[in-house]
Length: 202
Image (cartoon, rainbow, N blue to C red; front, side, top):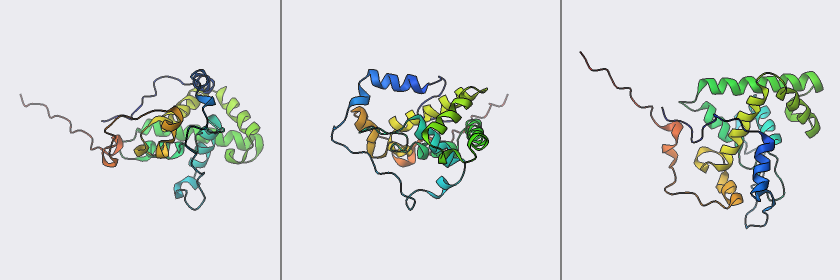
């Protein structure tokens, strides 16, 4: 079966990711002729975004990569849409989906236990405290790394996959995408799985 455009076999640390961007000078590039897309309004947001675990996952990704002045964050690159498309479309990896949902449940439980409210209603300091506690638990750091990888994919992938609207991530990175770009009916999760070859009769 076709695989997602990027692989997640390497742990990615938020500090490492941001430090890499800073080293490349990408965190100081502003005024290069584009504007951040407006935040999704309640009217335009998809209905599924109001249903758990998506609000929690959206808030975690926004905390992992917040927007800055002239810098698109997870919300601006529609990371949650990219994640939803990747995990819920036909051919999605069931194990990967279960791991993401399990992690979101752990975040929700920690937020309720420590602050008595959903993660998305916490302030930045409280969110950091919850994620630091999760990071110290078994598998927590790996889960956060996986989620940050999804954010990076949404930033870099072709907009046809649901992230990087209008190429906002490419514009920020001053990247010229290759051609031809994938049409909507040829994205990996809409392709028909290859038919397995039948064994020859002996």
